[in-house]
Amino acid sequence: MKILLIGAVYFSESVLKKLISMKSEIVGVCTLKNSNINSDHCDLSNLCKQNKIKWIYAEDINSSEVIKWIKISKPDVIFCCGWSRLLKKNVLNIPRLGVIGYHPSKLPFNRGRHPLVWALALGLKKTASTFFIMKEGADNGDIIAQKDICISKNDDASSLYTKMTKVAMKQINEFLPALKISNLKTKKQNNILSNSWRKRSILDGLIDWRMTADSIYNLVRSLSRPYIGAHFISDGKEFKIWKVKVIKLKEPNIEPGKIIHRNSELLVKCGDDALRIIEIEPLLKLTEGDYL
Image (cartoon, one colour):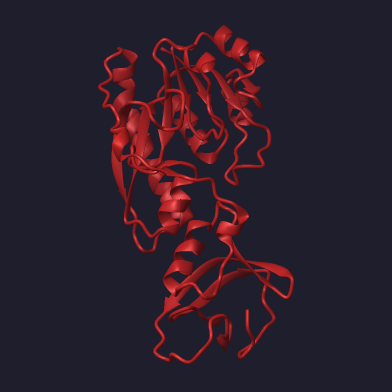
């Protein structure tokens, strides 16, 4: 079975390494040299070179040049993992076994953009790892593998990304043998139950100290590395917060944004309770009694 992979993030690299470790016949890889979209961007060309795999930079995956290159590779199946552009029918129709997509949510729920970020920002306690057969449109094809992933209160973007990747690699182990003999069992999505998350903007990562401490905590952990970081503006300068801790506060007469205490770390009043800022970049020179 000849496999072609489309991807350009850390997760794509993990999938490619997994397929290589399973001694799959990989006939090509489409990747990106740079990305202004994904902060977890990963150029797969070096891994391809190390393993003597054909590859191409595909800025427009639906262009006639890229489609021609894919057709010449004659894949039986395409894996599309970590690719922010929709594939059109001319690409989807190339492999006889279809295109396998990936989405880290419990489809049909939570289709769309930034699923790990939204799951953490909204304080969800569970998500899922889902492989599906891609169709035109976003995340709406028949499911071939789906496993729940629990989200703990201590999870951040990095730890949830790691959980997601580990679960997905196990799923590939399980369904790839069935795929090779064209014996995959699929399950149609119930579109009536579906919802779609929108694309996030820079303003979605802006901290407003009038928010509850729990809401800011969820925002910070959702955008922690490998993502861009939650931020706030003080005296015209941007500061990124990478790690915080919620501190319960009984005193009601303190305004949001006030620095209550400062030693090696800052304690800042929120809409309710307070946050201890454990990691901030760059360092903040304000002191107790100042306001953010």
